[in-house]
Image (tube, rainbow, N blue to C red; front, side, top):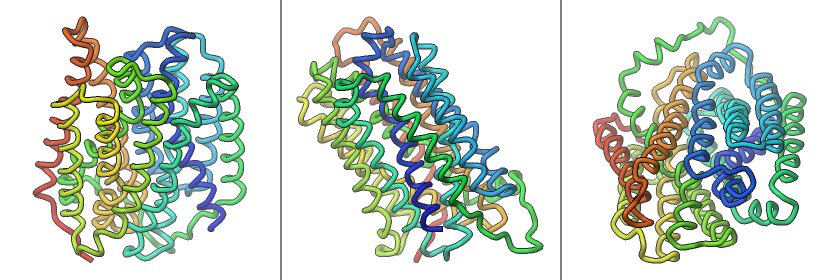
Amino acid sequence: MSRGIALLGLAYVLSQFFRAFLAVLSPALRNDIGAGPEDLAFASGLWFFAFAAMQLPVGWALDTIGPRRTAASLLLVGGGGGAAIFAMATSPLHIGVAMALIGVGCAPVLMAAYYIFAREYPPTRFVVLASVMVGVGTSGNLVASYPMAIAAETIGWRASLWGLCAITSLTALGIWIVVRDPATPEGETRGSLLTVFKIKALWFIFPIMAVSYAQVGALRGLWIGPYFEDVFSASAHQIGLATLLMGAAMVAGTFAYGPLDRIIGSTKWVVIVGTGINLAALCGLVLFPVSGLAFATILMAAIGFFGATYAIIISHGRSFLPPNLIGRGMTLLNLCSIGGVGVAQFLSGRAYTASQPAATVQAPYVVIFTLFAVLMSAGLFVYLFSRDTTH
């Protein structure tokens, strides 16, 4: 099982990479195939929407055929195939198709690991295991930053994508060979999605799940690149370094959140305080959008660190799920999270276009940051009424 978890962890590293690498490639894609910020926002949104759309089928598949076949087959066809299409892209449309396919391929990998954790380990260990998996996987953000910028400049972005196609395909084959499906207790009844919706406690968690990662994923996955390039005239190396720092902060934040609910004795208040600080950093970008490259980088890193609440929020939701609804329930929560990023990317792309022509170079980005702050505030308000879990 440990080798299988390691391979699923590698697959999740790739998932994190693919959702974040467009920010670094934005200058090259603009020059080579004419893909502007709105095109990349659309393509990034397609990744998240395809990923989100697959969550309910993935939940059914995890509960029915198990994590091994579910993760391996989708990662091979979607992830490997999508990377190949990206490598051959000659227009923004091809980038959108490739990102949608890659989103399909990445959709099951984290949930497959979480399904195994929920089935094989005690509930009290779930949040730590979940945080470790996300923390390790988020290192994909680091590879998608400065190292990807170096690779794109050294061997070209097309050759880099062909290499990613090979790595993704080999990882999928390894999952098929190594991962072992957890045993299902004899006589366990099959749940349904309708039953999950009837769990009232989850309805106060769905909104924060939808917005907590939305602005982190949208900023790190795309907007940090055009924002730094347009407002601060940042080079590809500077953008790569900034995204590297933000990605490192996301990794550190995930590991920091993992044990806090047991230390403090409350899951809910850990999320509330962390989200509040995250919102304050986002408001800093709204109020001081041109205060310098270093200051903006610090705020982006703060958003990455304090916005790394995904694992602890999904653990909060997991605590209300019975064993027979683990697959469907966790993938529904994940749908909210990833779907929220997709919505945020599409809305932010429209906001960027609507802000043109802009009175100042920073004006479109202030609109985007304000949009994210409003969404975050709404989700946090609903979450204030959620039922806490203590340890």
